[in-house]
Length: 588
Image 1 (tube, rainbow, N blue to C red):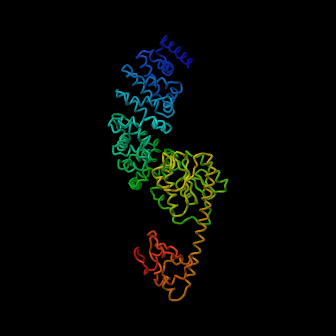
Image 2: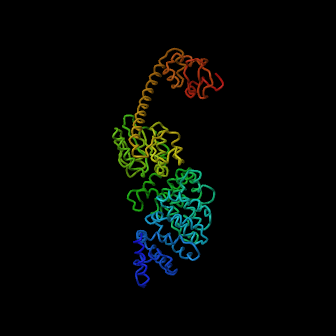
Image 3: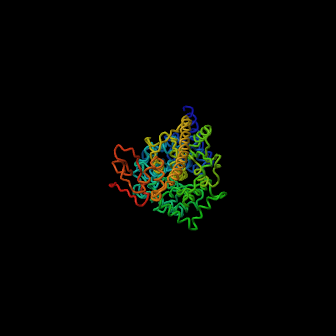
């Protein structure tokens, strides 16, 4: 450190002894940084001149900003921004403007966090100078956009610091709204539903995005639409926000952004996919699909479209899959019992490495596994039409592994997969097994799973998989689940065959009783026969059911007299029997 200070003092002396006004600005940046490292030794004019040159340099391009960060400009800039007193007001204004420019991109914005920018910017929000407050809020807004800085920002107390600015009509209020959207707009916890209260925050964001897309000024400035679209994309994850977004006109704004701002189409289409999970949003999107402007979804989903990234094409295909109702109604015909089935893995790419290890372990145990990039012996790897590939993989699955994580919950694509899997599970086509990929994000952790994913999980059992060392154990448990499921399927097939045979045997009974009980529901006949109660068939047929009476058992069942060995009969079976047999709750 002492060596660095000696070098800086030497550079400063050289600056004081020379005067080269014609020197190119890019060659002066080291001199300006040296000046900022010793602000008390430089005049106010010199400090302001150095800062203005650095501001011009930072506005050139991303490489210029990166150069400033790499060569040690951040720490002295932050130190100057932290000064107090009337003397420093003008200097701090320019200094914060430089820092705001540097914070535009993650490559330079994240190093600002590491250099200690957050507490300085938060403290500046209390300043009496409006320019300083506005620029400090701008820095916090830029940094909040970076997912890598989210945890540090939440722990820094920034949400509490910006509360007084929420709802303000000026640009600073809009920046505060965006910060909340970036940091907690997606959250389901009550204490984080700052976007849900009827304060107009969501409506202001949608309105600002609309005006920006139409080249209108917002609070006297032309804003970047990217930040507004990102805010809308994140708050759309929370189901509590969806209807308000749709009511505020978000669907039309996002559709326009997807069409006119292709560089930001991933944000717009991602938000639209989220809104399709809302009834009102789904209705509006389906209406748009019938209009000429709805062709944008097909255009963007087409392979080879130069204006769309692979992420945009995938989201558009998934959105079309949702809008056509395919996620709600699985095919009526199940895969033939003769066909092989596999284990399908549904996950977010942030957990890809551990999922790959899980798949490898499952294959070692002899299971056929389908993962999007690898495929199985039953269904090939995911093709260009991701939605169709996903549907085929789910329909061919005996067990689906849902790898639960924050990224999974926040992904519209994962939600669509899970929704389709739930529909298939409800139809008895497969079994869902939940693997917890993050120790601090489970149904029992302090930050518990919420929202749609918690509703889907209900009270299902889950297995730990948040560490590589747990993969082998989890794979073994998945194997046992699959074995149990296959055994259950075979057992159900066997029992179905036995009931069919029993029904055929019962129908061979001759005499007058045969004609009477032939109208009984097949389930009743099969049930009686299966439980070796064939002798009661004539009694049922002749409506002689006085041996049955209602007791204090659950109201959905009929039970025998005390000490009787007659089995319990579900009302649901008997109620579909011969029309002459009626069962009522307070009547034998």
